[in-house]
Structures are given as C-alpha cells and as structure tokens.
Image (cartoon, rainbow, N blue to C red; front, top):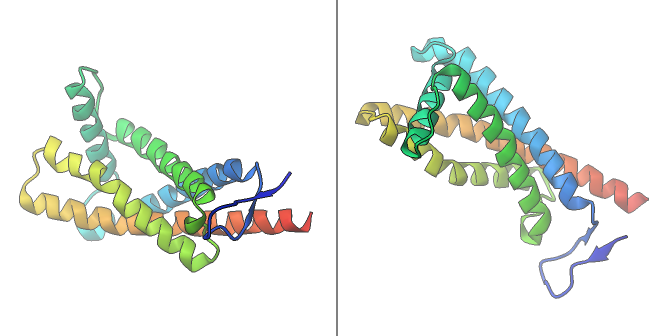
Length: 181
C-alpha cells in the first residue's frame, strides 16, 4: 500500500508504510559501520597522536561512570564501559537519523552528496552535548579539552559521512525497488 504526502509542497516522493522500518534499519547499519570505521582510524592513528589505541574508550567509559554516579547509579568506567557506550550510541544515533530522514520530506537523502552532508550535520550537532560532558565531568584542562574536541570533530565527521552514505544508498535502492514492484 502506497500513499503520497499531501498538503506538503516539499513532498515529492511516494512513501511506503515500510519506509520508517527501512530507515531505522539502514540507520542502524550506517551507525555501526561509521562507529567501526571511526575506531579503525582512531586506533590506527593513535600512535601518531601519542595515544595508545584504546585510550578514547577509557575516556568514554570514565565519562559514563561519572555521569551515572551523579544519578546515584554505580558503574565502573574504563575501556569495557567505553566500548559498551560507544557501540550502543553509534547504532542508536544512526537509527534516529534513519527514522528522521524518512519522516521529514525535506531531509530525504535523494542524492549521495545530500545524504553525506545531512549525516555529517546531524552527527556534529547531536554529538555536541555528549562531547561537552567529558571535559566537564573529567575536569580536563583547556589544552586537553581542545584536543578532545579536535579529535572528536574529525572522528564524528567520518562517522557522519559514512552514516549518511549508507542511509542514502540504502533508502534510494529500497525506494527504487518499491517503484519497480
């Protein structure tokens, strides 16, 4: 069953009742792919940055532990917690992105370039509150905070580009298959 969006001048595509589920699915896949790519690049580049390969996971885990401690929930930080948070957040943020682009006609990633741009914009905006908690909760110096933001910006740029590309390609291929059915 297909219907069109009516009363919306920006709506130019038919939508399927399955499009939301496909958007979420492609978003989960894109979020996971972006997370893995980010980690491969970060672990590979860490020696050049004077870091060990898993230090960022420790920072993420320690931030999560401090955050939950503020809520009265005990949690151990470190690398295991960081990996858990990182691999839950990446696909979850991807799923939210996938759902959003299927529901807002102006955000439909009709081209690969638009999908990548939307993915980058989304990730860089959504990640700011999450990134801000680290320097605040871990009492980072100004230099450490600047390094944290610079590194995070680059990694999230990569994540957002991959997320946008996967969602764009996936939804466009799914839509073209529906049009041929």
